[in-house]
Length: 197
Image 1 (cartoon, rainbow, N blue to C red):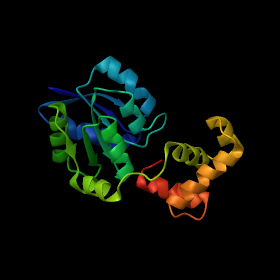
Image 2 (spheres, helix red, strand yellow):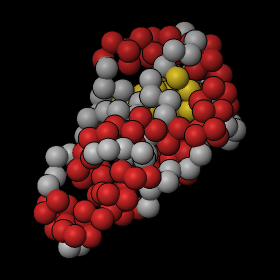
Image 3 (tube, rainbow, N blue to C red):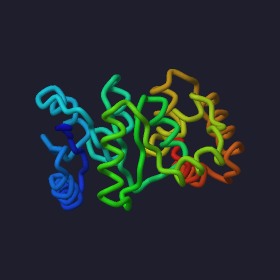
Image 4 (tube, rainbow, N blue to C red):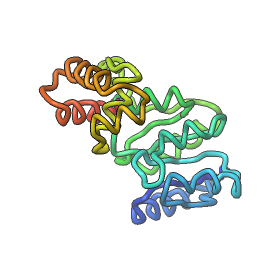
């Protein structure tokens, strides 16, 4: 029996997935959580074989959760097939990445494949990630843009990153240029759409 933990903040979707997986003779949903920061305690308590994560959840996003669970068999089930998300997931050791509109049969097949140590990547998502290429942003540009996305001022970003305000402005300007954006807002949107933030 493959023991599965489901993490998704949308209750109706999480329950529907659990119900559909419960119809599979070799899969048992042993735990469900609605926030990313609840995943690790649930993993420790229930010892699932596979963790199925949504990306966007309160508390902690699914990609951060995956990075904090090295060695755990993880499958990302998401509505957000952004190229940067797939690359980050693979870098974190995630073994599966499929869209929420996949069939129940496809999800069950993906869980089985991930459980046996294989990989299961949605072909369309994988092709989009390959075509998009790597993020053009440096780590510091990404950090500055991510803080700006949360509403931080240049001064706040400078303090958070231990930089001068002039250096922060340079990083933000460089990020806008690389993303072909005319201002921070459009730069943030462009980076988020690609999954680079």
